[in-house]
Amino acid sequence: MNTIAERIKFAMKVKNKKQIEIVRDTGISKGAFSSYLSGQYNPKLDKLQLIADSLDVDVKWLSGENVPMQTATQNTDTVQQYLFYNNSCSEYLIDDTFDTYIGLMNEHSALVPRFLVLVNPSMNEMHLLPIFIKKDSSRFYNCPPALLIPNGHSTFTKDFDSVHMVLETSVIYYYGINTETCEPEITELTYSQSEKCYQITDGQFIRPIEEFEKELAKEALYLKQNAQ
Image: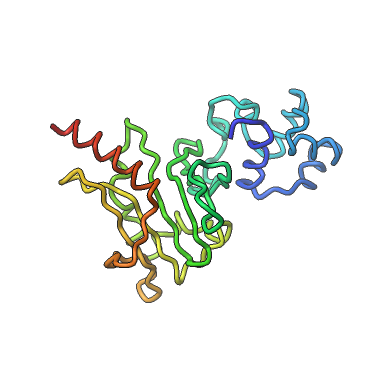
């Protein structure tokens, strides 16, 4: 998400704002704004500031700088805690069976990439691989406890419609690491309608994603070497 066009489209999704609303707010013509969205032209700073104001985001972030999307004075409650960003150019785009996304979490008023996500809509299943950032990798070695708490899963599942998942019959495969053995561990989570949360199931039908397994093995080896 490095271009201005990508950031405008991403902010529009996060803020649930339509093109016609931004055109109305900014006075920018529909044709000009469409050219910004397509990446054909980049808006000049004055136009970019108008777009940032309409989207209620930091103009520096919108221009591509490595700063939080929200400004320091904004209420971060207006930003979703977790959402999916389409990642159709991913190296993990295996075939037409899976859709690829990046899972972003709202941390300190910035949306931080935390998961590589593969979704198989026909099977209603999701594969979650943490993006291991060395300074806080351990946060994601184990399956997020919120998924196992009644209604606690909403942080992760509120945006399911956008990835064509149905909560009630969904299955999540979490690619984590057993911190006692330093071995890769894939956990199968099946949603229980009666308990209103995910439950760990036997995993006998897991069909692991080979590329995800390789990334997991690298992190497990790193953990094992640093534990010695």
